[in-house]
Image 1: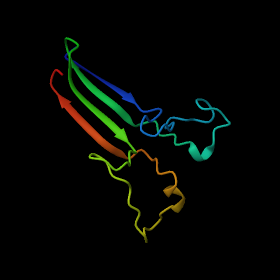
Image 2: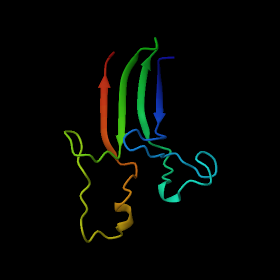
Image 3: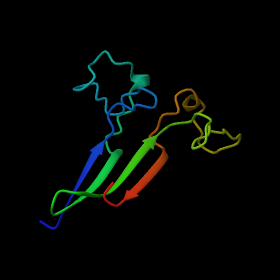
Image 4: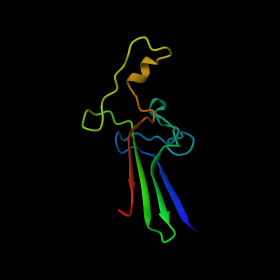
Length: 108
C-alpha cells in the first residue's frame, strides 16, 4: 500500500445540533418532526491521507451551515426577487452549505 484515504461524514452537526442523516424509517424514528429532517448523507467532515507508514500527511476539515457573525463566518443575507425562493426556508436554513473548509498538509 502506498497511501490510504479515510473520510468521515456528518451525522449530527456540532454547529447547530441538527441531525443531517435522519431517515425517519430507520435512524431517527417515525415520530421525528418532518420539518427538522434534513437527510443529507454525503457531507464529509474530515478527509485524511496517510502514507504507507500510517502517518497522516494531509487533512481537510469541513464545517456546514455556520451563520454566526464572527471572524470566519457571516449570517445569510436574503435578497428579494429571487426566482424559486422558498420563503419558508428562511426559518430553517440548514442545507449543507460549506461555511468553512480548512486544509492542512504535512505531518502535524
